[in-house]
Image 1 (cartoon, rainbow, N blue to C red):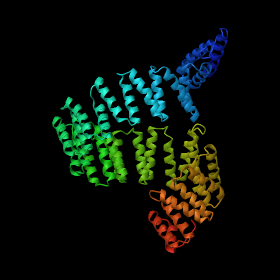
Image 2: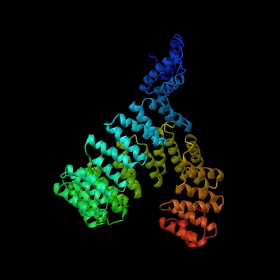
Image 3: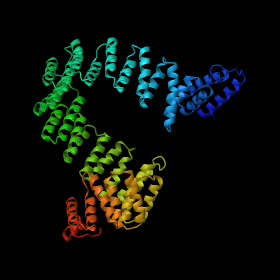
Image 4: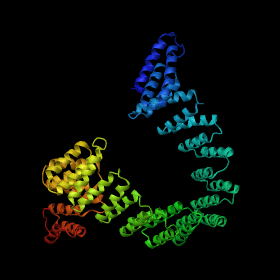
Length: 585
């Protein structure tokens, strides 16, 4: 049998062997540094061994050896540099560690400004610490030593920008162009810098310099147009767009740029026209067209604009690319966003016809059916998703609750049991805890609260921070008027961990209601309402109940009426509205 030795033990042995070897040598002391030649040699050796260990990914041992080398010879700036670097990076680094680490790094860089990588590491560390002045100082020296290294010059420009020295940054980009030549990237930076300095004419001239090198370059024309649009010189912007179109009349990117131009000036008719032209342009690939259509669709949704315009463009895309699943996927997402679940399901069906092994598409189909409250179809889609992705345990989090919603409690329990049998309670403690909590929810509905509460306790023992289980446990305890102090404690923890979760806040309010602390209940139920995008029937009913108990009976009836609109089959809500009084659930 092979025997392996840990890196940490190896590090210890290295230090011990070095100590014994060096003990045989003389103990002369360097008069200047006060460090013996023996310790200097020992520190050099340990520093080299530290880098050997670094290659074996043993950061802890690497750090320990560097620390030891620094202790032996503080004049060894290389060892001190990397010790300081790791000192700053360690997980529990204090402010003192950060400052000390930076000082150790600076010591080496000051002594050896020619060390390229160390200088760059140090400048990054300075930037992270907010010492932009110190970073600039070292990068200036580095740039002086590497005048034609583009990476260094870009780093210098960035340092000037961080120090808000825009003139110096502009000079750096000028130097870069001297040995790299002109490019869209450097021109764009120079335009931005001129704009920052308030020099609009200078910005335009910078871009013209680039444009004049290749006026027939479509990209250069588009960049010119974008710049003029930024400066609100719309006629000039349109001139360069037209010029680009003359050069390449079938270039879809030109049409898209024109669309952005018309959108910027508020011309919706030409905006739509150019989007259409971009989508039918032969030179634009499918992925780019989808990006164009996604941006257009998002804009129309945000503006609450007519869906006919979006539908027409999707039809154009489908006619062009009928066998492209991504088109149907995007169309389905659009329908889901506007809550047209029927057509969302239809488009997902087309997508799955083209690629029936797409587990993610089956999962999206499940989600859309859940949103449409078509639970049988959602379960069907989820099971299909499991066929193609059997390791996706999250699907069980959907299937079992769907059975729960359908009141098919035996199937829900069986689903939870199947999932629990496949999950490691130690490695996947959060998931295991969730599944136990879900099983407990089902048992409550089946009337077995003793077994349910035991499952909740087990779930919280396995994962004490599971706020979802805490919330449900607290709510069911409050419904049964049992152990309300425990319910209050758990509800408080859930809300503290999720202060904007309307459901959790509602539970907290309801626990206070059950404890007859109506002032606190009213405070938290109002918070639940304000945090809910669309308050549920339960939250509105609770609001009405609490208002009633605080004496605001007219407003209570209004909230019950709102709740009844969302749950028209609730007999107890009907009684509350008709009799204008509170009834226990």
